[in-house]
Each structure stands twice: as C-alpha cells, then as structure tokens.
Amino acid sequence: MNPLTLLTVSLTILMGPIVTMMSSNLLLMWVGLEMSLLAMIPLLTHKKSPRSTEAATKYFMTQTTASMIMLLAIILNHIQLGSWNMHPQTNKLTLTIMFIALVIKLGLAPFHTWLPEVTQGVPLSSGLILLTWQKIAPLSILYQIHELLDPLLTTTISIISVFTGAWGGLNQTQMRKIMAYSSIAHMGWMLAILPYNPSLTLLNLTIYILMTISMFLMLMTSSYTTINSISMAWNKHPIMIPLMATVLLSLGGLPPLSGFMPKWLIITELLKNNSTPAASLIALMALLNLFFYTRLIYSTSLTIFPTNNNSKLIPQQLASKHFPMMPLLMTLSTMILPLTPLLIL
Image 1 (cartoon, helix red, strand yellow):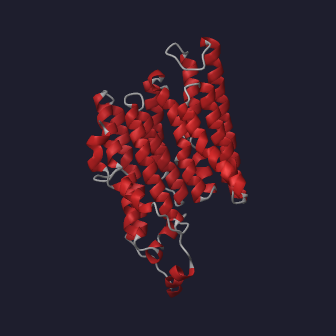
Image 2 (image 1 turned 60 degrees about the horizontal axis):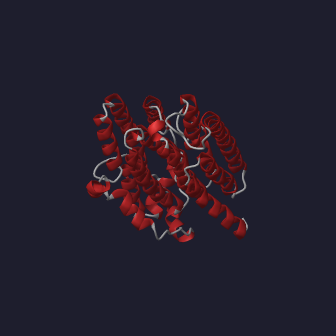
C-alpha cells in the first residue's frame, strides 16, 4: 500500500472512534462509525487474497446493514422529538432498533457469525484492530444511552453472547477464531453490567484490550495462527511459553491475574442488583472459556510434539518480529489485580 494511502487510512481509523466518543449528537456519532468502517476495508484487503476479499466483503455488508438500521433509529427519534439526541421520552421501539444496530456492530450474539469469519480471513495485525479499537465506538454510544436501555434485553443479549463465546471457541483450532469467540464472550460480560454500573464496563474494556493486544503481539512474533504452529513455539521462543500461558489464564479470569478483577467486580455488582441468575450463568460459562484457554496452554507448554532435527535450525533461519511495548503490556495484563481498590473508587 502506498505510504500516503496507509497514513490516511490509519488516521481515519484513529479519528473515527474519537469523533464518536466526543459527540453527543447522534448524527455525528454515526459519521464517526462510518469513518471507521470505510477506512477499515483497505486495511482488511491489504494482503491480496481471495480469503481477505471475502472477509472484507462480509465485514462491509454486515457493518453497512447495522449503519442503516442505526440511521433509521436516529431519523425516527428526530421525527418523534425533533432532536438529534436520545431522551427519556424516546420511543422504546426506537431505542430497541438503535440497540440492535450497535449489537450487530459489536458482533454480539445472535448477530455474531460474521466476526470469527472476518477475523480468520485477515492478517493478525488487522484482526487485532478489529477486536480492540473497533469495539470502542459502539460501546461509547451504549455507554451514553445506558440509562435508557431495557435491562432485561441487555441481560438476555449478554448471556447469549457469553454462552456463544464459550461454546463456539471449544472446537476451534485457528487462533484468530479462538480470539474472536473470546471477544464475543468478553463483550457479553461488558454488556451484562452496563445498565447497573457502566464504569465497570469501561474497566473491563480496558483490561480486555490490554490482554488481547498482549496475546496478538505474541502471535505476531512468528505468525502463529493455529494450535499446531503454537505447539512449536517451545523450539523457536522458549521464553514465550510461560508468558503466553499467563496471558491465557488472565483472559480466562483466573486469580490472581488481572483478568479476574473485572469478572469479580461484575459478579459482585450483579448480585447487589438482585441479578443472581445472570451472575450464576455467566460465571459458569467462564469455566468453559477457561477450558479452551487451558487446552492452548496444554498444547504449548505441557507437550512436546515430535520434531525432526532440522526443526532445531528454525530460529537461525527465520527472523522474528520484536515489539518494545510487549513487557509493559504483559505486566499490565497480568499483574494489576492488587490495584483493584484504586480502580473502583
């Protein structure tokens, strides 16, 4: 890609969620989402292949459908109230239409099927942006209208998403699909607590982004895209084995790692708000997530697959990528549980 084109695309992707987050006008929020959508397409097709073209097409069709539904809700709200903002007087149907549009954009169940396929069809770097930065804008809109949302609807969608993320990731062998289903489950946790304590949604999003970036950077060091390729990491990058195991356990929410903090706080808050069934269900599904993370750990660190002698020359033959920010990200994504009292004030 031309350097000037790449710069333009990168700046547009950067500015899209920022425009959405800084706006209180629904039309400007929609413009920010469209900036992210249109700039993401060239990034998805950066490496020309039929798979990336298919992924970009699926992404474009799904996101434009969600954008049209959202624009419909904005227009209906303007016709009813003469305002470009959501108000308590907004029609419940309009709010539901807006909510469904944002759920599609986030890739939450039952509108999730595009997310694993698109993530699998694009390079790891594009998948990282898709699963982290692109989630910020829709979540910021949900954050601004959280008081108007129906708690029963948000809880239902969140439980279905946590179930889908847990069951969908069980039989996967592709790392990008596993991370996509992990994203669906984490988004479900964020949506579950949104009507009760939106600050915990932001905390969960921050820790999720830190953990996902750390995981993707480790995968990008030598383009590990399948469980079989990760099983050879002991030969190429021995130090990565304990690091990857720690991040995976943190993604699963195992104490005393950072990933335990948002799950602990969300379950506590749900119990305070008499949502015991929802808290119980998503806590049980967290065990399934932890199971397929543990399966990855088993493949990477608890087994040594048969190799021939030539494989021992791989580190000298293949150059690996190095990311200076990885130590800091690894520390933040695994060791900030003791800071919990400071973060919840």
